[in-house]
Amino acid sequence: MAKQKPALLYTTAVATLLTLLLAGAFFNLIPWTSSATEAYPGTQQQPGEVPVDPPGAVEPEPGPQQKQPLFEGNINRLPLEMIIDLLSFMESPIAGARINMTDGQLPGAPRAYRNGTHEGTDYYNGFSGTPIARGTPILAAADGIVVRIDHTYIEMTRAERDEYHRISAASLTTPEDILDKYRGRQIWLEHSGKVITRYAHLDTVKDDLAVGDSVTAGQQIATVGNSGTGPAITGANTEMHLHFEIWLNGYYLGQGLSAADTRTILRGILE
Image 1 (cartoon, rainbow, N blue to C red):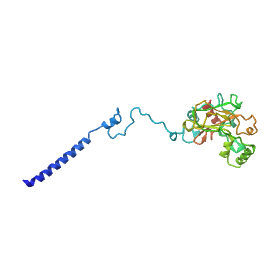
Image 2: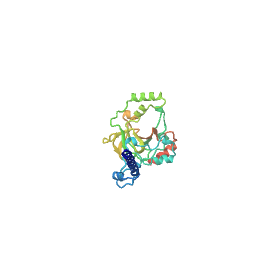
Image 3: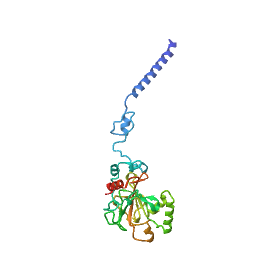
Image 4: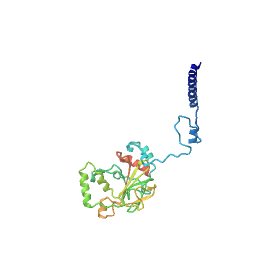
């Protein structure tokens, strides 16, 4: 009988171990949720679910790198009505002004003198339905951020302009750095959907504005001038106008379109 005692003890130990293992498995089947409800009071989170934000949580504002363009690709390939709808948040950069009826003052018009293409629309006195002269206020076409502002500007000389003409004539198109000189004093704004507007040939820009500042639609940002033009070199008081461009994804609005279609779009969004 004494020899059977170790066997009995061994059998008892094995039975106890099996009981503990079965009990542990049973308790693991119970849907304990106290930790989830403590972490997120008021939720009905179940085991295995991805934790949800607590009630009242606010999504963080997207950073600059998260901004999405208004449209991927060349916006000019969309139907005219869709382009107008996408850009309907914009306003005229000159109060009461209308889009020019002259094709040569619209985006896409040839510029033979510099072997290039016009990339914006011009607002001239006598062609825009409202008086335009040196000093006429220029307004932000939409809410946006200043991304360029030429507080310091030096007009090109006659010799420099002649040299730019020579270089452009020998090129396939106007080199971008020279085209930038022809635009004169400028201010650029970035708007919703990464839309960029450029305002060129300015006389002045607002002293209290700097890169990174926010502006609202209709806020004055500059005044009409003739910087970057031939008359500006001699100080003549002619060629006063605003050159206004709209860009998205590296394409200017009206690029590749007929003058009639471009005019329809510009009137639809700016008048």
